[in-house]
Amino acid sequence: MKAILVDKNSADGLNYDIQKRIFEENGIEFILYDCQTEDEIIEKCSDADALLVIYKKITPRIMDNLKNCKVILRYGIGYDVIDVDAATERGIKVCNSPTHCLDEVATHTIAMILAIERKLIMYHENVKNGEWLANAGYKPHRLSSQTLGLIGFGNIARRTAEFAKGFGFNIIAYDPYLKDDIFDSMNVKKVDLDELYKTADVISIHTPLLDSTYHLINKDSISKMKDGVMIVNTSRGPIICEKDILEAVKSRKVKAAALDVIESEPITIKNHPLYDIGNIIISPHAAYNSVEAEEQMMEILATTAIKVLNGENPKNIVNSKALGL
Ligand SMILES: NC(=O)c1ccc[n+]([C@@H]2O[C@H](COP(=O)([O-])OP(=O)(O)OC[C@H]3O[C@@H](n4cnc5c(N)ncnc54)[C@H](O)[C@@H]3O)[C@@H](O)[C@H]2O)c1
Image 1 (cartoon, rainbow, N blue to C red):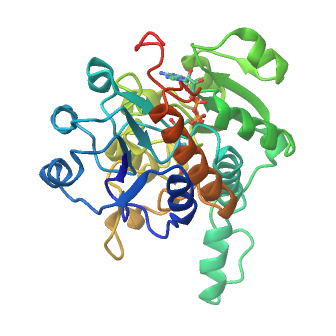
Image 2: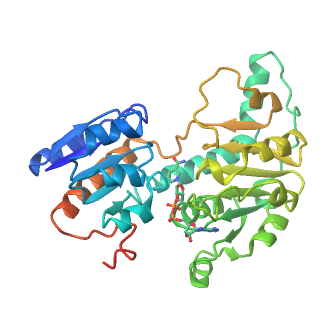
């Protein structure tokens, strides 16, 4: 049997040794490609029993050309690169790695909030330029005087809430799919979206990218937010309309934006014009990253693939309900 990785270089610096070992020990051939196009994926990966993917889109056309495929696995928590409905229609299981980087993304979210509120990047640049000014830019607020609004209250948002409590934030969250006791058990106030927009000083986004969350943050929703709100996104770029948030930061309606993900990622040019606006910090979709998280993800995905190929149904089949499992 063959496990084929479609796009080994889509994320830089990954080490596949753990997966090579696990697949080898289980008699499965592990093949790594760096396909760039849909046609190349079809040409090279059609005999995969398990197809693994980092960032390339796995379309219905690709699936129609997979002769033996039982499972498609995504390196990460979000699986929006895979057309899950199309996979379900073809009886293919879709799996992710749901828990390997909860601490990392929550830590990154808090790091971004702290960097902005404490003006670390601005201070660093100023001092580098010989400007020793404690009051450059906006006046920071004490974190315990602020309300943190979490959109989506799944695993990462809940870990973020745990960390944020240490700084004394008042925490509110919007997630219409969860029961009240999840919010109550964490002492987080459940609110609707309009109340979150009206009340939060810092808004952090933690939903998957879905039709219902595409451009959730746009001109209209921003107009409902407090003047001077901070927006943090460590989930998926297209949840925020890039043009609208840039305008809002420019007008100072939004005090600052911290984006680990952005609609037009990857940014690969020097001095991108969006930096002219100021008060935006960006990291290269790296919130997940740590030695420990990577090792865990590699192990989870390889063992998941093997379980599915052996006829088992592990918990991280994201379309298990739709497949009637
Ligand atoms: N930047 C990174 O490196 C990185 C790493 C891992 C995950 N992520 C992103 O973070 C997202 C969240 O991860 P998670 O582990 O917390 O997932 P999760 O599945 O545990 O939580 C997602 C939550 O969003 C809620 N939700 C869905 N639609 C919603 C809507 N319209 N409004 C409000 N809430 C909604 C769900 O009910 C769920 O509770 C992932 O989908 C992924 O895209 C980013």
